[in-house]
Image 1 (cartoon, one colour):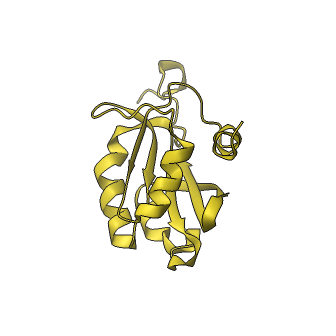
Image 2 (cartoon, one colour):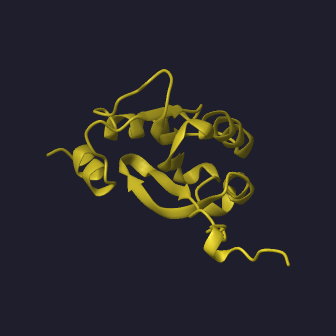
Length: 139
């Protein structure tokens, strides 16, 4: 196994994973692309993993807003960044992930000083049961 495949295994990357990877922080994106080299990269349709390697918070917001609708219900968002970029913490993205109803799922160090912050969708709020048995009929 290579270090990249070890990281992929630790991150739960499975065969057939569908990923969209983009962003203008090219070196961080390249580090993620090495880890995800066996992932499928569909041009359209649902994705299991949305990876953004932004240079700014605004860039992160743009890509998340554009591609989040394609993310499956159990899909993940990764924000890949250079640790020294100033975007090196989940605190750099609170508005972005809160607007998208995402919750932190941990972080992973990549080789050469890059880090991936993982997010997932917040669990759906349970809706009250509106079945006939649980509904009160008006008198």
